[in-house]
Length: 169
Figure (tube, rainbow, N blue to C red):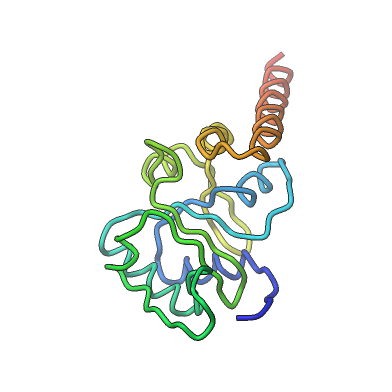
């Protein structure tokens, strides 16, 4: 699959239409909450129930998704069984890159993230992980770029708290 335009809202629309239970995480989740850094993929944490994995598989089929590590010409069918076999899938699709995670950090599952997440409504409705949970994920990932992103997320939390306490006065 050659280079494609990155369309995260298009991917969200497909996931929603198929009834996939997921929470947006990563750079898109940070960005809609006011913390922006460059991102070239949509990261989601999905529910791991068999029914949800079937819905996710149907959405991935529509997106013509395939693992990025596969050589061109090698086909694989991402069905519920295959999706259950791994916790992390890095995929390319007709709408750009999509990373699907079952547990993005120890103890952070779809259920945990959804309970603490924020719902955004626009052309599509979706839940994003809280800034605090994004910090936990970045800390667990432990990559050098995550350190700067953690600081940006903490600054956004501090700013939100300051605005909240100013409005309480």
